[in-house]
Amino acid sequence: MIYAIDAHPFIWGVKKQSHENQTDFIRKAEEFFKWADYHKHIVLMPTVVVAEVLVPETDEEVDRYLKIIGDRFFVPDFDKNTAKIYSRILHGRMDEIKKNYQAIEITKQQMKIDHIIVATARAHRAESIVTYDNGLITFAKGIIRTDGLRDSYPFGDAPPPSLFRDL
Image: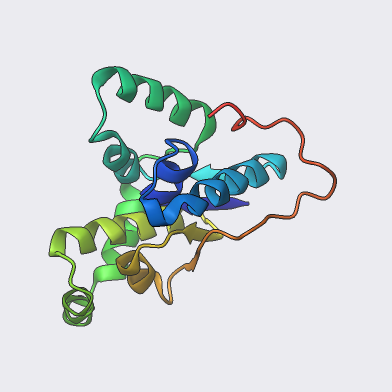
């Protein structure tokens, strides 16, 4: 199965960064990545999400994170098929979408990025998008499922060594 992520699971589970009141999300994201690896699920990271997580980093950290991303995540291009899906999601719905993004107080640019994430996940038949982003959750409704991080993930027996163990 394929699971798409937005920036937060990566920031929590790979960068090990969180706000003071979100420290439990580090553990939850680590568990998600270990579970996905154990069950040989694919973790899809849209290119726009890759760009977002790299912005605050130094050149050396960018190179380090790009290596991790290249080794452990599926990062598909925003290709013609994805662009077609993006256009079909937005086509004829701009008035409705505008009301939604104004109601949840995000910018038009954020709304477009959220739809790029949704279109990328749909284009590659992801089961869901793992996110806590209200905009992304709003815009994904009726298009693709969104999930938060669970408190625990089923491994069966004890989890084997994971690609994500050393992050």
